[in-house]
Length: 614
Image (cartoon, rainbow, N blue to C red; front, side):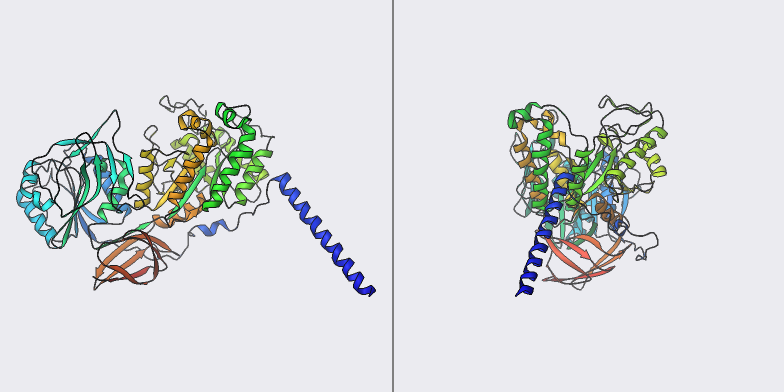
């Protein structure tokens, strides 16, 4: 009996001790933020320099790209089309009608792209040959409104046009009426603005045409993109000016993917969300809209309202945040660079971010872009300039020291340029003096400073992971950018700033609850895609793999065969199946994205997809 009582007492004391320890841990978490895991083999995210990868493969030259260098818009449009074909790993021949003595033969090609409007030096005989070639199984994409009365008059029936007399008409809004742009069916987006209307031809189409995008305007609806079967081949007409713009490359890729029975191209497959200026010192004082809606200070709002909401949204949708660390908002650009001793809030926010599976990246010692004296901000920014790169490097070193103190075992490896500005001198300095930084997360489209990045690897060896869109509220232009990148690279990179919620130009007047609902709606839409939620470093690893891929694809005997060069451990591709349905897959796994578009995870450098019903 006494032994039994003793055992019970021992068990009770042990239980009380365990509960006491648990309470102590909870108190520690409350006082210190949250415990977080250290760097768990981050190098495994990347392909080692001495890795055994598959040999490159030649894509095969299957596309004829016809353009006219004498047209005013020629270079910009040609650049966009060539970029898209290169990203899709399509081998092509570019042919300039302005300098050519005679037109080429269609015989070696599977597809033809016309990047021209007036068809100078393109004869009627050549167009007859084109449509006969399409009828026999070729695919032709017209990337512009066809502004040639003779061609429209002679070949209207083959293009699916009922009226050979047409006029330029405004295209106000675009309505995406099919699923050929993944995730976009049914969307209505603003196409023109009050200052500049965009135009297309007011063609009337016959019933053989499949309209993918139509527009509204003062003179009624016009078909902006349509598809027509001609015999065994396919014609796509792009009756708008989208090919002129860099942010419509996803439209070009989607149109091109309709030209053959099955088309595959490598993609990144990553969704990355950035929190710029976070963690950073919390602003003091009051804000008009925060005070109006919550009756409290900025500090209380960000700590107790905004950040918990952001964590709840990330948990709901499984996204990961990459925060851009700022040590101080002082604008000092000359040594010495003092340490921020008020680090409790930065430590709390950062550890919470890491605990949720996120990442902390370099944003800056302060929020001054790394640019030399004389850099032209074009009147858009009023930042200081660094008298030399030694000072800028010293400031970054202080940030590295500060981060190591606050977040030990979590080295900073990604760099987010303040205000999306990074000079050539600044990029070179980071490459030379901070070799641990392997990723630049700049901006994808920059019409002001010209520092735009593409997804890939730059000449300094940085993996470039540009951010495509920003803000809690997304206007139609930014939404189009997102749609485009999802359909070309199958990637999403979006960033928000804490101060978006207190800036009138970014929607502060509508209040945080409205902005939060808009933001959650965007993430809900993105989450419908089978995209991998990643941090910046994980996304950089995906870009590194994508950048080195080459591809050769052939279709015969009812199957698609893919040979993938530069393959290391996995590769991702989008596959459009226009004829038949996918059957057995060897060497990979298919997941439906939307309609007849699939995501392929390749587990080897050779993949076969059998096609049923072909």
